[in-house]
Length: 112
Length: 115
Figure 1 (cartoon, chains in turn cyan, blue):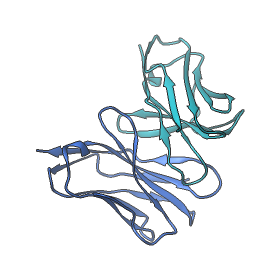
Figure 2 (tube, chains in turn blue, green; figure 1 turned 90 degrees about the vertical axis):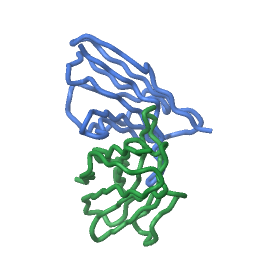
Figure 3 (cartoon, chains in turn brown, cyan; figure 1 turned 180 degrees about the vertical axis):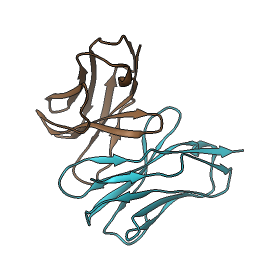
């Protein structure tokens, strides 16, 4: 069966520090991968998605970046965090069009 | 660009009663998929129900059903016989059947179930 894991679950970082959130999928190959951010009143905001290794589409211009170094690994990064980067980050995967989007457990980021 | 709108930030329903959550979307595509996801307090997102736009018949999953009005671009979720465990955030989502693989979500509706 397929599983998705993301870590860390909770992160408290000072403004200006770097960020790395990791997500891995097991039990499937060539998944579509996604990073969403959930903020109060804004629902799930799509940040990045990837349909293959090295292929990243950015939806929101900001100081975050994403990489897909391996087929089932998706990484969300920042060189310098801003206060506005605080939020709940969700990694997800799917297969093809119309497939169910499977979510990880989420990562709570607090930038102080 | 496609958009998804949920105009009800919060709804309440009495246990065992029926509640309907609203969702509208905007798209120029003729074929697409619509979803309702549930996010309980644990924050784990769970698929509730899925609708294929080319299918006229409304999707149902046990106590959950949708009213899909393609011309009106409306996709509401009806929860029958509400249970305490239904209390959660509910998100409506859209994905086009061609082109990009983006899933676009609404802002969510918080459902409270009153005992």
